[in-house]
Image (cartoon, rainbow, N blue to C red; front, side, top):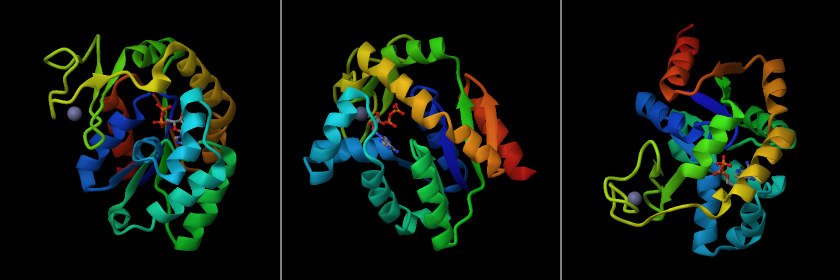
Length: 215
Ligand code: ADP
Ligand code: ZN
């Protein structure tokens, strides 16, 4: 399948993407993960992106489009892809549309995962992430803590709070989302690709996607 996952930070895009990859071998592409990897590696891309990310701002569109143009042409994308965190702005969506047309690739749908703001805020402030770059398992101190406090179940590395998951950065990210990314819902509706799911459970989102793919 070829899917775009829309939804505010904390809506569960990453979780849904991971579940969907298990269905048909489509690859999850998270621009957030790619950027955090670049920051850790200290690459030119990372140096350029870091400041924006820590403030909860978006990284400039041209930087993101450069990354995605390459990524979407890698061989593992042939079986399908799930875009998690991209596109994030109308210019990115327009550029993606042109790029896919050029490559002869058609999208199946854009899924908007709609979760109430209070649920999102609660999730993000309690979210913790494995610090091991090759693992990045997600935990939640309230609902899904690691078996041993602060230690990843999967790899044993420390589980930490992301720099951009302080209260101030979270509220900035939500404002940025509403201003820059929420308009993509209308964009994909016009394209005839939108599937909106009002859901706080990832299973409900998966069922909605399956239904749409089957119909
Ligand atoms: P979340 O969805 O939880 O906000 P992500 O992991 O998707 O977080 O992204 C983290 C940060 O990386 C964003 O706050 C932003 O600075 C940057 N980023 C990720 N994807 C994009 C994108 N498509 N365009 C611009 N900036 C991006
Ligand atoms: Zn881990």
